[in-house]
Structure formats: structure tokens, C-alpha cells
Length: 157
Image (cartoon, rainbow, N blue to C red):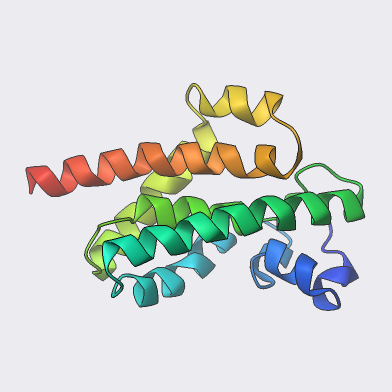
């Protein structure tokens, strides 16, 4: 367990990298980070798909910088409290999924499963890709796996 650095509350870059502070909880910060992403998905779900995907792409690019900067400042690669990657991964999971609380919950569960268990190539990317891009890419891949599963589930129902 990594303690939440005080800079999270003083430096905007760290605050965003820590998922608006949600990554500052002392246990399961990735889970809390994913939970904190749900209200934003609720708001974003009203956007046309092109706008939604553009916003997620911008969040990814900004996230690479946020995570890299915060990681370097803290001297810890992928500090457990850095959860902006969970935000983006969850938003990928929920792309083109009409909002409902049931869908939001299923997306949360699926994303957390893929993020925690890291099937290939997620685990490979997590271990071999460095920097802010490395922090982000494993959650992007987990989001793609979860998105595929969500859409299969939606297609079958």
C-alpha cells in the first residue's frame, strides 16, 4: 500500500493523475478510481459517439502526460494512487453503451476483472512498457477487452 502524497491536494497535475483524489484512498485505489469515473460516463453518455470517442482520446493523451509527470515527481513508477488510467479504461469499456445503472455496474465489474487479472497482452504491456504511456496502455487494453465483452453481452440481450 502506498500512502497518498500531500502533493495530490496541492498540485493540479497530481490531483488529476490521482483521479480527482479518488486514488488517495488507502486500499483498492484502482477500484475507487473506476467508481469515480462512473458519474463522468453518465454525463458523457449523452454525447454523440464521435464526441465521446474524441473526449476519451484527449483524456488518454493528457493522461499519458499526467501519469508520467506524477510518476516522475513521486519517484515511483505507476504509484497505486495514479488512477487516471482507470478513468480512461472504464470510459473505453462504456463506449457506445447506452447509459443505465445496470450497464454501468456490468462495465465496472468487467473492467475491474480485466484490469486485475491482466490476460495477454495486458500483463505483457504492464510489465514492459514504461513511462506515462506504460501506465495508461494496460488499462486501455483492459478497457478494450471489457468493451468487447460488454458489446457481446448487449448483442445477446
